[in-house]
Image: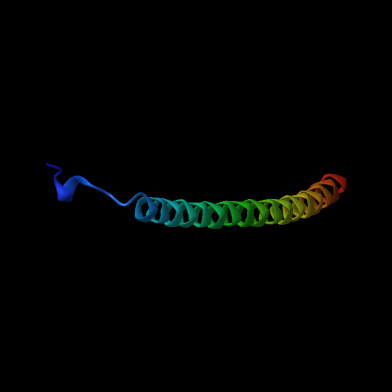
Length: 70
């Protein structure tokens, strides 16, 4: 005699499996997009900070050389 509670409809199992895989794939894609966005934002912020740093260094060097001349 077969126990009905242990039998699983393979089609239902496949459907659930495919839904889970699809959900995980979508989550993975969203996380990957967020990672790329954060990386891009970081690179832009880094470039801005480096440019500001260079500008401030130039101002400092100019002020320093002006003080040395006096």
